[in-house]
Image (tube, rainbow, N blue to C red; front, side, top):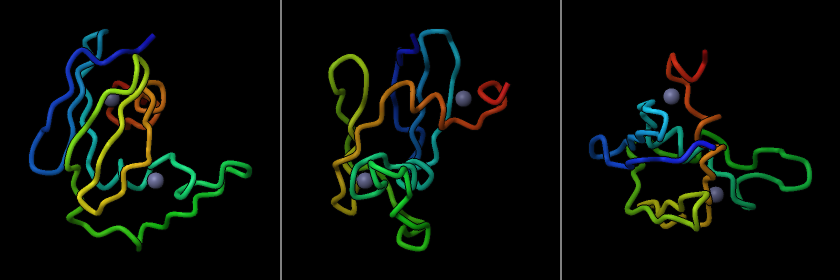
Amino acid sequence: MNIPRRITRANQHDIAITWNDGRECLYPARDLRLACPCASCVDEMTGFRILQPGQIGEGVAPASLELVGRYAIRIWWQDGHSSGIYTFDYLRELCSCRECRG
Ligand SMILES: [Zn+2]
Ligand SMILES: [Zn+2]
């Protein structure tokens, strides 16, 4: 199972995760915000993405992070959005670094 060993702010916007297998992944804030898996961003029944890129500004940034149990993080965004729970598995899927793409 993929578990973050360390979650840090890479800079003002982006989040860096070091995984327990040693992989280091960088998550640009806007990509993470657009990938928010909550029910107001994605239709739970159809998987249709309600949130569109035009709705999110370039400067979006996380205000804070919180661990949810042993399987996910919740991100509080500076735009007030905080209902997204990003599971570790989902975060690994989201990453597009060279190692994650294989
Ligand atoms: Zn990665
Ligand atoms: Zn959301």
